[in-house]
Structure formats: C-alpha cells, structure tokens
Length: 89
Image (cartoon, rainbow, N blue to C red; front, top):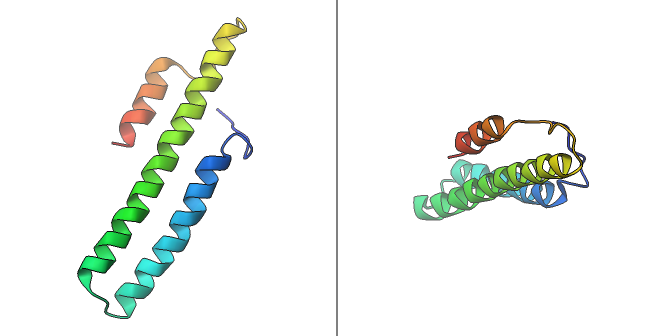
C-alpha cells in the first residue's frame, strides 16, 4: 500500500525527531556520558519510532476503511494489517 508523505506527516515528524535523538545518543556514548542519561534518551528514541510505526498502521487502516466504504477492494487485508501491527510489538 502506497502512502504519500502528506498522509504520513506526523510519522515523518516523529522519525526526524528520533533521528536527531539517536545522533545525540551516539554522541553521548562516544563521550562516555552517564548510562542513565544515555538509556533515558534511548528510550525516548525507541518510543518515537514505535509511535511513528503505529501512526503508519493507523493511516493504512483508515485507507482500507475508506476503500471499503467506496465499494472498492482495500489495498491490504485485515490479516495483513494485523500482521504489520503485531510486528511492531
């Protein structure tokens, strides 16, 4: 299923923020910073990536539902969406 960057604006924003946070985590490790601070920032990166994934799944679910409402075949089956959703957990 193809999705446009406009549809995924929130997910892209989260991923770009996570990219910056990950760079900061790498620098922290390279500079020998305290492990608690490193892990706190790493948890923030992980959460941002997870939320972006869930946002993408939600967008896909809305696209499939809209296709059904128009009487069209959805681009993905419920089983495919569920498999993708579970791959994030």
